[in-house]
Length: 286
Ligand SMILES: [Zn+2]
Image (cartoon, rainbow, N blue to C red; front, top):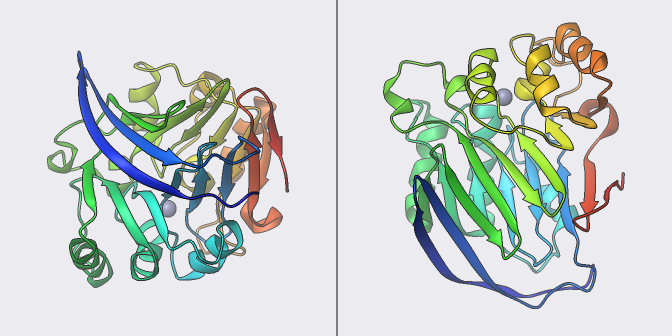
């Protein structure tokens, strides 16, 4: 891909009736290819997804469990590129947050989206300290937010609602769920939510998507038949470590995906899974 430079020039929050819109306006030397790239990184047992919009905005959803994310990002980003526009931490569990420590040490991070749910672990506290030192702008995710990643790519936040940190939920059920839309391409990211949250958002939003980041590494507590039917993805991607001790992905989740004729790709078997889209056609490139 042709090299490109960009600067996050403006950061605007617009009230849109009940929606809150967050707009990234990037000054971009556009790539000649004009493709959205979405890579589900093989970071072992955990989630990390690298996204580059067709105008070059770079986003990482979750950092995985370790510094494995750095070598994976090194394969996707030019060696000289040491800035990331937006990190999204879905929830504080170590298999999603620990790699962000390494990312914050190596990259300049302009904006961080997270929730107000915290963890008492030393690792999470180190992450928060580094984030403060970095001085990144913080956005707290909330149902109804629309984040403009460039002038035609949006990330709509479906979960969690305001005040989720006070509701006594498991951290898994506080995770950020959102859909990325670029033209006709739609990708739903479901963190580690259980069925209880799947049921909540199923009644509220149009979940239809081409790709589903399968919830909670294929846990049996996620991916209900009803939820899979509502999303009706062509492809489900499971981010999971080889021989993990959790038994992920489970027969229950795989069975529900198979029943809906969803093609399943797994980072433990397939390695990093990469897609590109021109807004019309979505292609698996590895
Ligand atoms: Zn997880």
